[in-house]
Image (cartoon, rainbow, N blue to C red):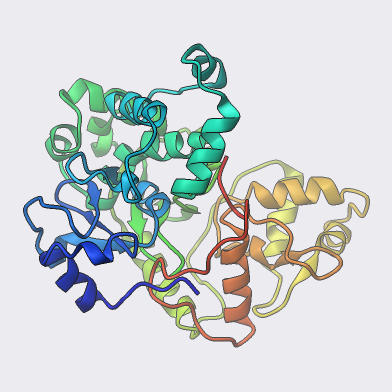
Length: 367
């Protein structure tokens, strides 16, 4: 297990700028939106404004950007010049998409960039770009701050720049938050890492880990199906979800009661409805699931639909495994799937957030 020190120990380390803890943990500063090494010489944040991470990947997908003062992405030494060029280009415009053709025009081999970022930062180059693109919107959601806080306090020089980036991701300017009909989205902490949840006034419609590879496509699907503004906020459905998730992760809740809405094709609805029937602590194979929805030869389509589930955990797509009993894939990472199945089978509940097992090469890494 890759386990962080205690919160008290990490607090002592960063308040003393103890360099011996560099590489052991990173701290995200909620008030500034950056993540730092423990030895960072910047002004020390209050403990209530700090959260801790094991890897840069976790910090990036929690909506934080690397500190320019301590450069946490260079914890083991300065990165090569070409990596520094890439990082600078991303920070100058986090919403920019740097594709392989542009990398080649910069005389950077895309495969080399992917390998370096994966080895040193725990994520591919494109995953890092995606995390930074989403990071600004995630920060607005996570903190529930004002437009001024999000736009001017987290790297944007103008309201219009923030509105443009927010609109590209969520399909509506943040100023439309007063719409009568809307989907409100909020940050949800969990022992397996942060999630983003979305709900109308009556139903939970979205729940996904922030580092999921398909999260941008899932948000686009949400907009397409509901045709409603998606804005940061809170409501009674999200409050109910948080309460039930806490009980689930402590092993005291076996069946969620939060009301759901998950539009899709007839076939998709049949698959997702069947997922809800899989008992707590049980699993089914893709073959069995295909038989249960009346399409025994559609195992591949069933697997694809399983992966398109927009409400993780509550619609338990993690309970579908290979015929051999092996876990197979999971959009949130196989390690999370294993942790939830262990929990449901009566094993120990997951530990504190972001205390997670080291990943096998390539396992659950977003691309």
